[in-house]
Length: 260
Image (cartoon, rainbow, N blue to C red; front, side, top):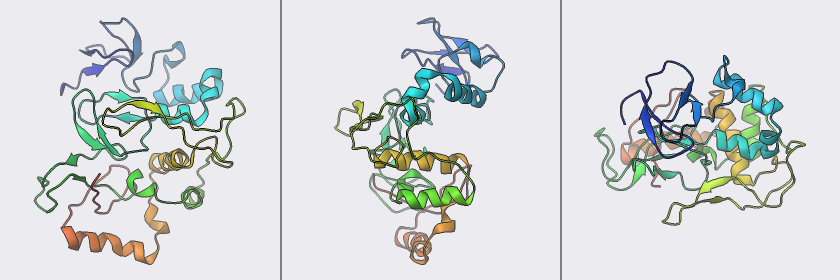
């Protein structure tokens, strides 16, 4: 599964080696096609356009996609296992300690950094228990920020965000975003949280996740809004457990550690 040509089918649970140098690939097991890059089911509109352009086309023109609103957005920007690249149409909220059903790799669903059951191999962390190291823009930290604060970070960089559901999205009292429930059985179930005005038809937890996804996509550094006491936390954390520096390719990071 480490072969860079290995692909998981997004339609079934089969995997295969892809030797075709094009976006459209067809699973030899179920004979259905999908994009080898974005792993979305293949549609004719994806031909000769990038994955980003195709996704924008769906947002602008696909009635079924528009009906799903931000729940569909969170699903399509769901979880990808960093070890085997299997994709899940699930949100990153809930328990951030995610276990891949295919390869059993354990990682943070917000930043993809691994969860360690004992001491880290870096040699600079002395936590001998389940934990992970997160960059400061990881959902693990930013999920504690109130929506207005997350919105302020986006406004500083002129990044647009939604506060109301689209006209095509039916109003609902409960959040229908799919997530993996931490019940010991790893069941995929609707969130069911209460939706509130000004949160684009989502519960507060998933609305925060939506805002954080925009922050990550635009590589925004949350440190610009840190209070003085927050600036001291990384220093205190490093002194207390000698945590290693974690990195994300999209932004500057600080040391951080969690225990699940």
